[in-house]
Length: 121
Image (cartoon, rainbow, N blue to C red; front, side):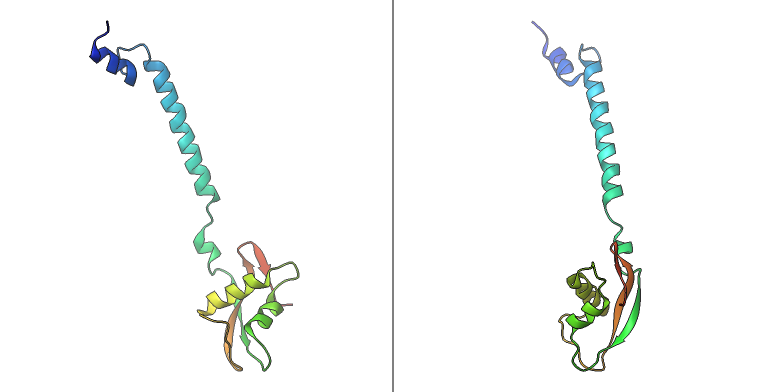
């Protein structure tokens, strides 16, 4: 019958047991896998500073008959999403609603934002 100390060493793969090498190999493989996953996560996570405001903005003065939606349509490229442009305009100007008044000067982001070109057409 094995002693309880030897059983614990065997279970944990400690020196003096027959399973030390396989357990250490498994731990090394698991650790290497965790490091690889961590590096991949760091590479995939977008740089929030880059996504948030590194593009230029042009000033647009609201004219009679314009809404925030119609302004967003004007500045959205053909293959773009008007809703995304609308959100960018709202965020850039700190607007809590879509209400704009004639004569308001609003900043409209142009250039590359979040991987999408937004230019005036």
